[in-house]
Image (tube, rainbow, N blue to C red):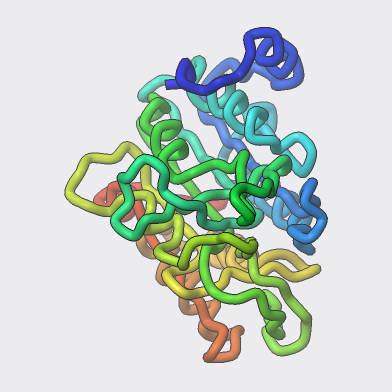
Length: 299
């Protein structure tokens, strides 16, 4: 699959030098981008998301030596591609567990290969996403599309793959009073990058990661559904904060399935967000895995 990615061999070699090669067992890749090359895309609280998730994956049993973090400048499109190849694919077996987490902006670009019913590709913004002008309109390039993400996931040989995406892809850019613990006190920013020339909003990345009858090797949990906005605050993103809190609160009981976790996170968001700002976490991938894959925080 990566043979299709147009990266010069010399550039690839240089980039690989900066990405540690994992050696065994369960792997986690945490990607967080709060400071973008496009200054207008900057988001608050993403570094807090990464700290929270790094602590959490340790509590979930991942060895800290097998947790790779790409943050801000390290989270370029090429950097993400290479990290997936080197950390989540190379050396991983069907006996292993993989977790991929992304916190940052989501957006939409025109569907150029005709595989989307709504005519748009849902995409995640890496650090080096760029706006270019073409025929008098802006185009967003250098993004991680839903198509490429699915190709990446399909190549991961792990027996258990969990994908967590804290981003959104539709709605208007407004500021709403939302906060993980007190939703009515802290100013916040929607995690959807809107630009001139952006196609009409269609579906979220959750829907883009197919939930049809096809067979998928992962279970995904994303922050928001259609026409909803995931929220970033200086105290961290609401979805990530709710997810971490629910897993820790359940630590003394039996492990939570991803399906149960989605319901508990959704309920926590409803309790803490003004009704008109509520967003609902969504499941994707192989929904049977959502009931069979469990997460358990240990002391």
